[in-house]
Image (cartoon, rainbow, N blue to C red; front, side, top):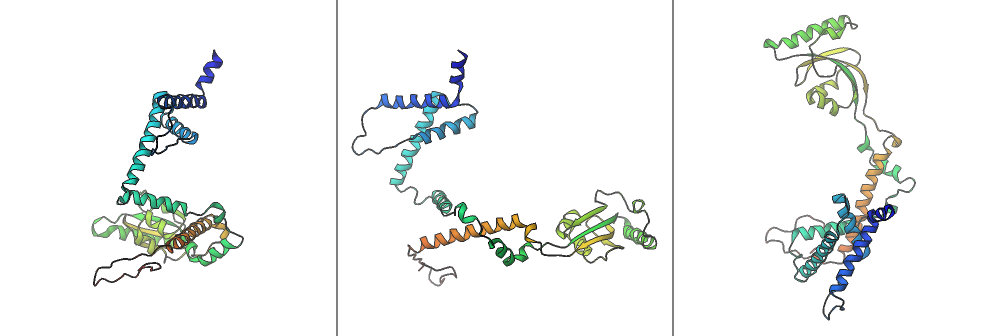
Length: 294
Protein backbone atom coordinates (compact mmCIF):
# COMPACT_ATOMS: atom_id res chain seq x y z
CA UNK A 1 0.00 0.00 0.00
CA UNK A 2 2.83 2.40 0.90
CA UNK A 3 4.52 1.70 -2.46
CA UNK A 4 1.29 2.45 -4.35
CA UNK A 5 0.82 5.67 -2.36
CA UNK A 6 4.41 6.71 -3.17
CA UNK A 7 3.93 6.03 -6.88
CA UNK A 8 0.68 8.00 -6.97
CA UNK A 9 2.35 10.96 -5.25
CA UNK A 10 5.07 11.30 -7.93
CA UNK A 11 4.43 14.52 -9.99
CA UNK A 12 5.68 12.96 -13.24
CA UNK A 13 3.31 10.02 -12.93
CA UNK A 14 0.49 12.42 -12.06
CA UNK A 15 1.25 14.37 -15.23
CA UNK A 16 1.26 11.23 -17.38
CA UNK A 17 -1.99 10.09 -15.80
CA UNK A 18 -3.68 13.44 -16.40
CA UNK A 19 -2.35 13.54 -19.96
CA UNK A 20 -3.86 10.12 -20.68
CA UNK A 21 -7.19 11.22 -19.21
CA UNK A 22 -7.30 14.43 -21.25
CA UNK A 23 -6.43 12.72 -24.51
CA UNK A 24 -8.90 9.94 -23.75
CA UNK A 25 -11.61 12.52 -23.17
CA UNK A 26 -10.93 14.26 -26.48
CA UNK A 27 -10.80 10.85 -28.20
CA UNK A 28 -14.18 9.84 -26.80
CA UNK A 29 -15.75 13.21 -27.62
CA UNK A 30 -14.61 13.25 -31.25
CA UNK A 31 -13.02 10.26 -32.96
CA UNK A 32 -13.76 11.51 -36.46
CA UNK A 33 -10.96 12.94 -38.63
CA UNK A 34 -10.92 16.70 -39.25
CA UNK A 35 -13.62 17.72 -41.67
CA UNK A 36 -12.66 19.23 -44.99
CA UNK A 37 -11.71 22.87 -44.58
CA UNK A 38 -10.96 22.53 -40.88
CA UNK A 39 -7.62 23.62 -39.45
CA UNK A 40 -5.54 21.35 -37.28
CA UNK A 41 -4.30 22.37 -33.83
CA UNK A 42 -1.72 19.98 -32.44
CA UNK A 43 -0.63 20.03 -28.81
CA UNK A 44 2.49 17.98 -28.28
CA UNK A 45 4.07 16.41 -25.22
CA UNK A 46 6.40 19.37 -24.78
CA UNK A 47 3.55 21.89 -24.61
CA UNK A 48 1.59 19.71 -22.19
CA UNK A 49 4.62 19.29 -19.98
CA UNK A 50 5.19 23.05 -19.99
CA UNK A 51 1.57 23.71 -18.94
CA UNK A 52 1.86 21.14 -16.17
CA UNK A 53 5.20 22.49 -14.95
CA UNK A 54 4.09 26.15 -15.02
CA UNK A 55 0.96 25.38 -13.00
CA UNK A 56 2.93 23.29 -10.49
CA UNK A 57 5.54 26.02 -9.94
CA UNK A 58 2.89 28.73 -9.62
CA UNK A 59 0.62 26.91 -7.16
CA UNK A 60 3.20 24.63 -5.53
CA UNK A 61 1.15 21.56 -6.40
CA UNK A 62 0.23 19.60 -9.53
CA UNK A 63 -3.07 20.45 -11.27
CA UNK A 64 -6.14 18.28 -10.84
CA UNK A 65 -7.69 16.54 -13.83
CA UNK A 66 -10.26 19.34 -14.21
CA UNK A 67 -7.61 22.06 -13.87
CA UNK A 68 -5.31 20.40 -16.38
CA UNK A 69 -8.11 20.04 -18.92
CA UNK A 70 -8.88 23.72 -18.31
CA UNK A 71 -5.28 24.60 -19.16
CA UNK A 72 -5.51 22.67 -22.41
CA UNK A 73 -8.88 24.22 -23.27
CA UNK A 74 -7.44 27.67 -22.56
CA UNK A 75 -4.51 27.02 -24.88
CA UNK A 76 -6.83 25.83 -27.66
CA UNK A 77 -9.01 28.94 -27.25
CA UNK A 78 -5.97 31.20 -27.35
CA UNK A 79 -4.66 29.51 -30.50
CA UNK A 80 -8.03 29.72 -32.27
CA UNK A 81 -8.47 33.40 -31.41
CA UNK A 82 -4.90 34.12 -32.51
CA UNK A 83 -5.34 32.44 -35.88
CA UNK A 84 -8.72 34.05 -36.51
CA UNK A 85 -7.31 37.42 -35.50
CA UNK A 86 -4.49 36.97 -37.99
CA UNK A 87 -7.00 36.24 -40.74
CA UNK A 88 -8.74 39.52 -39.94
CA UNK A 89 -5.43 41.39 -39.84
CA UNK A 90 -6.00 42.56 -36.28
CA UNK A 91 -2.26 42.62 -35.57
CA UNK A 92 -1.51 45.08 -38.37
CA UNK A 93 -2.72 48.25 -36.63
CA UNK A 94 -1.94 47.19 -33.07
CA UNK A 95 1.15 49.00 -31.78
CA UNK A 96 1.57 46.62 -28.85
CA UNK A 97 1.51 43.54 -31.09
CA UNK A 98 3.85 45.14 -33.64
CA UNK A 99 6.37 46.05 -30.96
CA UNK A 100 6.17 42.58 -29.44
CA UNK A 101 6.92 41.06 -32.85
CA UNK A 102 9.78 43.53 -33.27
CA UNK A 103 11.18 42.42 -29.91
CA UNK A 104 11.02 38.79 -30.99
CA UNK A 105 12.76 39.60 -34.28
CA UNK A 106 15.48 41.51 -32.43
CA UNK A 107 15.92 38.48 -30.19
CA UNK A 108 16.31 36.26 -33.26
CA UNK A 109 18.96 38.61 -34.62
CA UNK A 110 21.01 38.20 -31.44
CA UNK A 111 24.34 36.40 -32.00
CA UNK A 112 25.12 33.02 -30.49
CA UNK A 113 27.57 32.33 -27.68
CA UNK A 114 30.30 31.30 -30.11
CA UNK A 115 30.16 34.75 -31.73
CA UNK A 116 30.55 36.46 -28.36
CA UNK A 117 33.83 34.78 -27.48
CA UNK A 118 36.79 37.09 -28.16
CA UNK A 119 39.76 35.69 -30.03
CA UNK A 120 43.25 36.24 -28.55
CA UNK A 121 44.18 39.91 -28.70
CA UNK A 122 40.63 41.15 -29.31
CA UNK A 123 39.97 42.31 -25.74
CA UNK A 124 43.37 44.00 -25.62
CA UNK A 125 42.59 45.92 -28.82
CA UNK A 126 39.17 46.96 -27.51
CA UNK A 127 40.69 48.09 -24.20
CA UNK A 128 43.32 50.20 -25.97
CA UNK A 129 40.70 51.80 -28.23
CA UNK A 130 38.49 52.74 -25.26
CA UNK A 131 41.17 53.46 -22.67
CA UNK A 132 39.61 56.76 -21.56
CA UNK A 133 36.39 54.97 -20.57
CA UNK A 134 38.26 52.88 -17.99
CA UNK A 135 40.49 55.62 -16.63
CA UNK A 136 40.22 55.75 -12.84
CA UNK A 137 39.37 59.09 -11.21
CA UNK A 138 41.68 60.76 -8.68
CA UNK A 139 41.29 59.58 -5.09
CA UNK A 140 41.91 61.21 -1.73
CA UNK A 141 42.22 59.89 1.82
CA UNK A 142 41.61 62.57 4.43
CA UNK A 143 40.51 63.50 7.94
CA UNK A 144 38.13 66.29 8.85
CA UNK A 145 37.03 68.25 11.90
CA UNK A 146 33.49 69.63 11.76
CA UNK A 147 32.18 73.00 13.01
CA UNK A 148 28.59 74.18 12.81
CA UNK A 149 27.97 77.29 10.71
CA UNK A 150 24.44 78.16 11.86
CA UNK A 151 25.53 80.33 14.79
CA UNK A 152 24.97 84.13 14.71
CA UNK A 153 27.86 86.10 13.26
CA UNK A 154 29.41 83.06 11.57
CA UNK A 155 31.02 81.96 14.83
CA UNK A 156 31.56 78.47 13.44
CA UNK A 157 34.14 79.70 10.94
CA UNK A 158 35.84 81.81 13.62
CA UNK A 159 36.11 78.79 15.91
CA UNK A 160 37.47 76.73 13.01
CA UNK A 161 40.12 79.34 12.21
CA UNK A 162 41.23 79.37 15.85
CA UNK A 163 41.47 75.57 15.88
CA UNK A 164 43.50 75.70 12.65
CA UNK A 165 46.05 77.99 14.32
CA UNK A 166 46.43 75.48 17.16
CA UNK A 167 46.83 72.55 14.77
CA UNK A 168 49.45 74.32 12.69
CA UNK A 169 51.37 75.20 15.84
CA UNK A 170 51.18 71.62 17.07
CA UNK A 171 50.13 69.08 14.38
CA UNK A 172 50.09 66.33 17.04
CA UNK A 173 47.21 68.02 18.91
CA UNK A 174 44.27 65.78 19.77
CA UNK A 175 41.64 66.74 17.18
CA UNK A 176 38.99 64.71 19.01
CA UNK A 177 38.78 67.55 21.53
CA UNK A 178 38.09 70.04 18.74
CA UNK A 179 35.06 70.54 16.59
CA UNK A 180 31.56 69.33 17.30
CA UNK A 181 29.74 65.98 17.28
CA UNK A 182 28.62 64.84 13.83
CA UNK A 183 27.57 61.72 11.97
CA UNK A 184 30.04 62.59 9.22
CA UNK A 185 33.11 60.32 9.16
CA UNK A 186 36.19 61.71 10.91
CA UNK A 187 38.42 59.76 8.49
CA UNK A 188 37.67 58.84 4.87
CA UNK A 189 39.81 56.26 3.09
CA UNK A 190 40.79 56.67 -0.55
CA UNK A 191 37.67 57.87 -2.33
CA UNK A 192 36.85 59.46 -5.70
CA UNK A 193 35.36 62.98 -5.89
CA UNK A 194 31.94 61.53 -6.77
CA UNK A 195 31.93 59.42 -3.61
CA UNK A 196 33.11 62.32 -1.46
CA UNK A 197 30.35 64.50 -2.92
CA UNK A 198 27.68 62.01 -1.88
CA UNK A 199 28.93 62.14 1.73
CA UNK A 200 29.52 65.88 2.02
CA UNK A 201 28.54 67.75 -1.17
CA UNK A 202 29.92 68.75 -4.56
CA UNK A 203 31.44 72.03 -3.42
CA UNK A 204 33.35 70.32 -0.61
CA UNK A 205 34.60 67.59 -2.96
CA UNK A 206 35.79 70.15 -5.51
CA UNK A 207 37.67 72.32 -2.97
CA UNK A 208 39.24 69.24 -1.42
CA UNK A 209 41.06 68.48 -4.71
CA UNK A 210 43.27 71.57 -4.27
CA UNK A 211 44.12 71.02 -0.59
CA UNK A 212 47.87 70.47 0.00
CA UNK A 213 48.90 67.05 1.28
CA UNK A 214 50.19 66.47 4.80
CA UNK A 215 48.95 69.58 6.60
CA UNK A 216 45.78 70.91 8.17
CA UNK A 217 43.87 73.24 5.89
CA UNK A 218 40.64 75.21 5.87
CA UNK A 219 38.08 75.98 6.71
CA UNK A 220 36.16 74.73 3.67
CA UNK A 221 32.40 74.65 3.53
CA UNK A 222 29.84 71.93 2.92
CA UNK A 223 26.08 71.81 3.20
CA UNK A 224 26.50 70.83 6.85
CA UNK A 225 28.89 73.51 8.05
CA UNK A 226 32.64 74.22 7.89
CA UNK A 227 35.53 71.78 8.10
CA UNK A 228 39.23 71.64 8.74
CA UNK A 229 40.77 68.92 6.58
CA UNK A 230 44.03 66.98 6.52
CA UNK A 231 44.73 65.13 3.25
CA UNK A 232 46.74 62.02 4.10
CA UNK A 233 47.14 60.57 0.61
CA UNK A 234 46.34 61.54 -2.97
CA UNK A 235 46.26 59.15 -5.93
CA UNK A 236 46.07 60.92 -9.32
CA UNK A 237 43.80 59.80 -12.12
CA UNK A 238 45.37 56.92 -14.03
CA UNK A 239 44.69 54.16 -16.52
CA UNK A 240 44.30 50.72 -14.91
CA UNK A 241 45.86 47.51 -16.15
CA UNK A 242 43.60 45.34 -18.29
CA UNK A 243 43.73 42.56 -15.70
CA UNK A 244 42.26 44.91 -13.10
CA UNK A 245 39.17 45.64 -15.21
CA UNK A 246 39.02 42.59 -17.48
CA UNK A 247 35.48 41.56 -16.48
CA UNK A 248 34.11 45.05 -17.21
CA UNK A 249 36.00 45.25 -20.51
CA UNK A 250 34.71 41.84 -21.62
CA UNK A 251 31.13 42.79 -20.76
CA UNK A 252 31.44 46.03 -22.74
CA UNK A 253 33.05 44.20 -25.66
CA UNK A 254 30.23 41.64 -25.71
CA UNK A 255 27.63 44.42 -25.68
CA UNK A 256 29.33 46.23 -28.57
CA UNK A 257 29.83 42.98 -30.51
CA UNK A 258 26.21 41.95 -29.97
CA UNK A 259 24.99 45.33 -31.24
CA UNK A 260 27.38 45.20 -34.22
CA UNK A 261 26.17 41.76 -35.32
CA UNK A 262 22.47 42.59 -34.80
CA UNK A 263 22.83 45.88 -36.71
CA UNK A 264 24.61 44.08 -39.54
CA UNK A 265 21.84 41.49 -39.82
CA UNK A 266 19.21 44.22 -39.79
CA UNK A 267 21.06 46.10 -42.55
CA UNK A 268 21.06 42.96 -44.71
CA UNK A 269 17.35 42.49 -44.04
CA UNK A 270 16.65 46.14 -44.88
CA UNK A 271 18.26 45.79 -48.30
CA UNK A 272 15.26 43.68 -49.32
CA UNK A 273 12.92 46.66 -48.89
CA UNK A 274 12.35 49.95 -50.68
CA UNK A 275 11.00 52.50 -48.22
CA UNK A 276 9.06 55.47 -49.58
CA UNK A 277 8.21 58.32 -47.20
CA UNK A 278 5.83 61.14 -48.11
CA UNK A 279 7.54 63.99 -46.29
CA UNK A 280 5.23 67.01 -45.73
CA UNK A 281 5.72 69.83 -48.22
CA UNK A 282 8.33 72.32 -47.06
CA UNK A 283 9.61 70.04 -44.32
CA UNK A 284 12.15 68.07 -46.27
CA UNK A 285 13.73 64.81 -45.21
CA UNK A 286 15.57 64.98 -41.87
CA UNK A 287 19.24 63.89 -41.81
CA UNK A 288 18.70 60.17 -41.14
CA UNK A 289 20.40 57.06 -42.46
CA UNK A 290 18.91 56.71 -45.95
CA UNK A 291 20.01 53.28 -47.18
CA UNK A 292 16.94 51.82 -48.84
CA UNK A 293 14.85 54.89 -47.96
CA UNK A 294 13.27 57.11 -50.58
